[in-house]
Length: 85
Image (cartoon, rainbow, N blue to C red; front, side, top):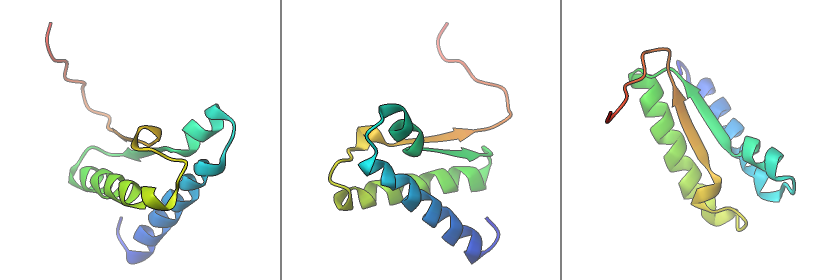
């Protein structure tokens, strides 16, 4: 995000996605409530954190949603680190 307009557009997109609160079809609802940020750098991580906080702060205004309904994902083009064996 480079401008305040970018931040406002992101906020509006998130609010539009929260309309999944009223969606009956589970597949459509899941897509509406999944938010993906591309770029694993500092800005991407900050954006994911802000989106996550915004979504969870909005939950009281959407009575049919729970934290389990929301998905926020960060994707990046780097190598995948695997834990364990």
